[in-house]
Image 1 (cartoon, rainbow, N blue to C red):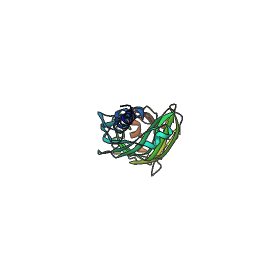
Image 2 (image 1 turned 60 degrees about the horizontal axis):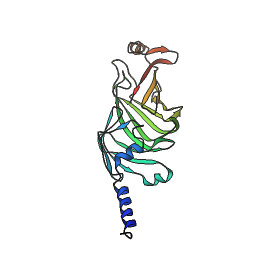
Image 3 (image 1 turned 90 degrees about the vertical axis):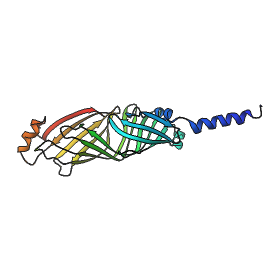
Image 4 (image 1 turned 45 degrees about the vertical axis):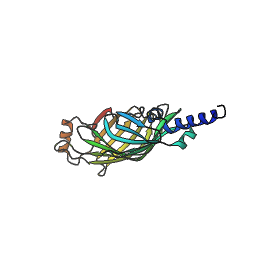
Amino acid sequence: MRRYLPLALGMFALGLILFFPMSVLVRMAGLGELGVSARAVRGSIWHGRLEAAQIGAVELGDINARIAPLALLTGKAKLVLEGEGSVPLRAAVYASPGGFGADRLTAMLPIGNAFAPFAPASVSLEETRFAFSGNRCIRAEGQIRLRLEGAPDGVEMGRSLLGTARCDGDAVATTLTGASGMERIVLRISPDGHYGGTITVRPPDPSIGAKLMAIGFHETQVGFVAKVSGQF
């Protein structure tokens, strides 16, 4: 029996590795800190699944997940995610003793009324990367595109605004501008999903200014300005 003990212990350790539950790794990788939740987490770390996943109130559908084993050598619990639903999603998210972040994040997220009265809206992330250490942003890069699907009657505004991610203290920030240069949104997103933004519009037609003021904008030297805030 003593001869077979090392073999038994080895088989037990191998079983733990092969069938280690994905639900535990999801917690280790810090998905909760990124605002991700799911109705159920199933499978092992090699082939797992997040069912009816959400980031904040944004529905992501089902997501396939697997471990990135080489990241363990650097002290990170890292998950590779790929969406199955109508919302495209690809990312590698990780957590380490010093913080958390995401690499190669590509997604289209419908964000509803986040930019009301210009609603509904969606945000597209293209190969975006960000990292936080001690709740402070230490890295942010990649393209962010905001698409506005509608606007109040009589208010014309560019429907697509583009910017790049950057760090701004404890938040990821971006300045989004339309093709005409008449619209600008400065946006900050904190690690807990809270966001705050300033929308500035410089309409070519002065008569639009009164319509903007009627929906909550106020006139400044740089244009008509409104504030938005909330949590994803």
